[in-house]
Length: 350
Image (cartoon, rainbow, N blue to C red; front, side, top):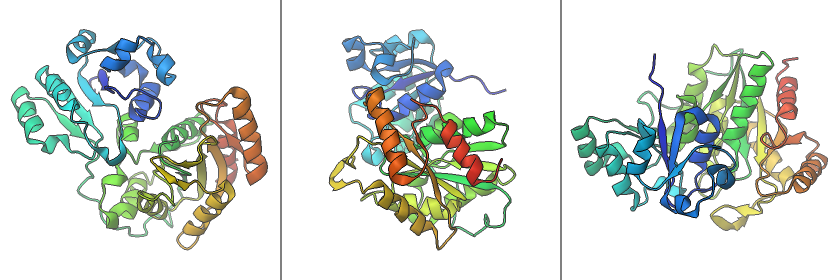
């Protein structure tokens, strides 16, 4: 039986719902395995963790590795997913301190810590493990059209931008389907999802020719599962990441698509010169992109209403339902019953 992990999650100077989305999601879904958050600036501010990111009640924020050790962690988990996946230079000493203290390191950065000479030497000396979750498995190749004839049903998440809750929606949808007695599984395609699910492939670190194949492989490996809910990445029109998004959609050949949207967001995050297209146009574009490979409809709109008042969120939900003719819901604020019902109907599960 695997030993239960005890995570000290590093967010140094970047603690926030979106700025440390990895930490936020891991704490949301693995609260009993999170022993503390390491962030000297947040600790100095003195606010409880749940007031900063909305989850993590009772989880302490510590100022240093030494203080965190009092909570008996077994690993230091890198709790951010920055643009480009680079390691903040100021974090090097913190990670080295953790290694010297005998902690394993878990990272989802594009910067492969295990290949960094300084980290690798320190880890070897202390006999600790560095787990770089973005490294793809060796058996990823091009897509081979293996999914078309499977009886399995697949739902893919896609969104109007990055970093707006596609993974959370996928997890909540999978949980909702399983609660209704369906044989469903959440499929992780990013580093945070892998941290939560314990398996998956970070498709944004896969060679471009193999992105479709990576998505196909994840589904093929789970071919005996009746329903898969596939975590989405990016958006099909994202100026930096569109290739990953489209490749995943084509490779996973979904039977239905759930669209993720943040009503308060008007421009692509970090690329503010690019406005987010109107929702109906974005949905049509997604459906047109999958049509030549494996036609699938967008069946519902999942919302991220962080920062909105309850009245604003409810109004946005109604406006989007009227605009698209599809059920809309924030699975964290409102629950996921509409989304689950839409999936059941689209997949013929009722």
